[in-house]
Image 1 (cartoon, rainbow, N blue to C red):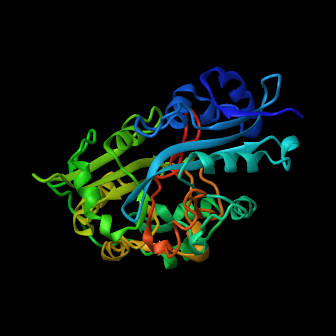
Image 2 (tube, rainbow, N blue to C red; image 1 turned 90 degrees about the horizontal axis):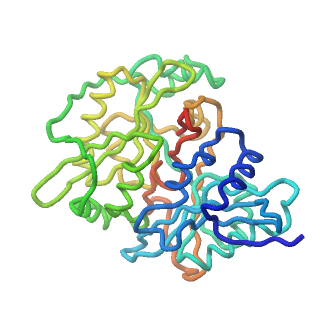
Length: 372
């Protein structure tokens, strides 16, 4: 069958909605026009060609496959490369196993210096293996949790686990923190954010490039989600920032604080986290959680008495929030480059720093509800 491959355009919106609702459901967030324009369009400094998302189209205009693309930049060993995250890749069932996905990946490897993904199953992994992607020892995003109120244990029973055993896995926090005056609200990012980003450059070999336009797009221009951002300012620049989302675990009335992204030396991030823990406890959030790769904030998590969820325990608390449901830990990470095939030689999982703010690991799920 004659299939044309090209970039998504605004004119494809009606066909895009039909395709998306075949693969997902009515009311899916990717059929929401403001969200689609924001999410698939990408940040102002990372979108040279409009939508980078690829679609496979029949002669009658019907979309039968897509490879969602989130363009950005990545820093690898102090060099900057064009980069894209793979998001929401789908092919209609009757068109699978015909090379459509392979064509998408090959095209994007030619288009961007580096390609990557977070969150995929073994079938998808096999496709990426064919293109030589690095999986960094099959390590997933690490997950740390801090329990503030007993209601957090009720969440485990909602997805099929035992609340009593959950208390053995993660104890109720006994420490007390205060809201710190140094933690001030950040309403938008400017060039001062470059100071805290540079401060951790020597400690991380691979991470996304957090420019002011990118950060403002990602967190302050989102049409469907609201973030809380605090920072510590100095005359030299921003010492550190912390971005979180206050969320309800639907359908319960339990709330939590999910740490989405943070950057800065651990000693400065510590002050922001202490303040946010105190704020979360004051508004009766049941828990805080933080997902990231690498070892940059590993000791800080121990200092602040977060518990790392490893092995089966990773899945005991809901990974998604609207609604909560049991999900396997598939937060695997892969990076690959056709232009620089040896770029990640010698780089280990601990050398990376990605957070829930990367790729599509924190996104809206529908026009009305949210998903983590």
